[in-house]
Length: 310
Ligand code: Q46
Ligand code: ZN
Ligand code: ZN
Image (cartoon, rainbow, N blue to C red):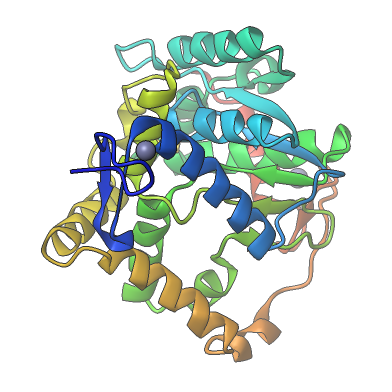
């Protein structure tokens, strides 16, 4: 397989684009494409301050690397969840994230959930009804809350996450199976700022997971290979497997599924749902916007889990 640009040895073949590239041209192509998507979906400009949520994994660190190379004002936010799982997951991912930032002279904010709230994520999960199965519901709630809080308190215009096409297609697949209109309406490369919630963007949403892995590897980014120990058995992983089988037989299916969805949404397929978007008001506990009557779900979780002993 030859690189389409220089005829050299290709390191990656992307059948859905009918494109094979060598290392040098791939490392240039991916940031160029990212720049194209940032502009196409009007994610942010070079005048805006971007907060990148980094987990220590290949996607978020690559995203930070790319935004930095493209000359955007991108700082990092690492949320220390306190997850061990026998592989020292949180400690190791924090170490790699801090190393990444230090080597490039980038600004990294670290929020330690235990220092902030008195308990780690698994302890919060244990202490509340939400934790009966897995801590993921609690974890998602805390991560969203902290990301918004830091973005607001430190004056960031936009929050960027490293979700790739495989992540987005799996979520879309789940929401489509359930015809979850409200979620379908909100899924996309950009979630506009509303009622005090920072704008959220996903600049990598059109890249396959294997393309991101190839980028991190070829760029020499050191990232944590282990997934969070609680991700095993997640429904989203099952959907990813199913979509990979489709993709194997019919290359491009995943990308078409996602892009055709965006097009249908743009054309107004889910528009009538927009009226049911609930109004937001500030939570009396933490001041962040919520649609719940009274306390937001984060504050209700804290209230519920505060007194229980772990
Ligand atoms: S939600 Fe669940 Fe993730 Fe939190 S506990 Fe781990 S798997 S990190 S994306
Ligand atoms: Zn080349
Ligand atoms: Zn609250």
